[in-house]
Image (cartoon, rainbow, N blue to C red):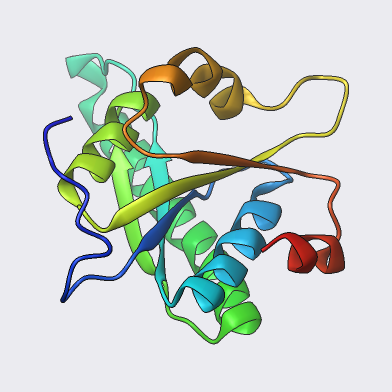
Length: 164
């Protein structure tokens, strides 16, 4: 990470980055980030990562179809999340779709936008664990370039309102 955070310099505003994935708790992260944006006078960046696997060349047509379907699913997920953020905070979040390894894409998005001030994730409250992204970040949080806020997936809207 080489880019300097500029979110509080003149002409900039802080942004909260949220990962919109297929987990049940993504809504908690979007809710918290949207409430934070209202109070901080900032914005929200919603990121959807499409994980790609090595494609066999002979199946290139199938890979193209799978990529197009993943893009459609990503757009639909971001539409839902953006609608939720707009309903919560009357904001229009930025939307980013990236393809590749989740941690690599996450770090690139942060590096490319010096106004991103915080990453917000929601943790699954179930017995299966906090979720793949939260677990992956747990190992990297000590060297992560921005603060990471993890919201419990069990928090209600009023509970999140009190915290954000």
